[in-house]
Image (cartoon, rainbow, N blue to C red; front, side, top):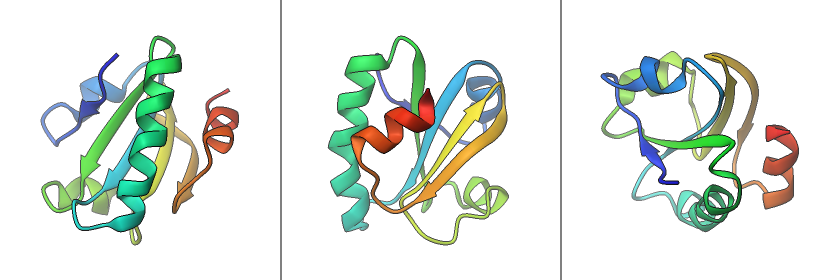
Length: 101
């Protein structure tokens, strides 16, 4: 599967059903860059069961504000449009697998 780039136009439609992991990130963020390969690996392994998505906080500040993002990377797990889990900072692959189960 491919990682979805979310914006204010496609956000609601992309997150309304199923399990979605949203990564709020920015180009200049070192920890965000460190997290990226983990998300890509998970997408290739379980992307058929979970939608992986990214929100660039510099381009989509309203979405970041809506979720109360104060530090990045910020990760939100949504199930059928509702937040069921959230993390701040780089997470291990196993921590993310556990959060998505």
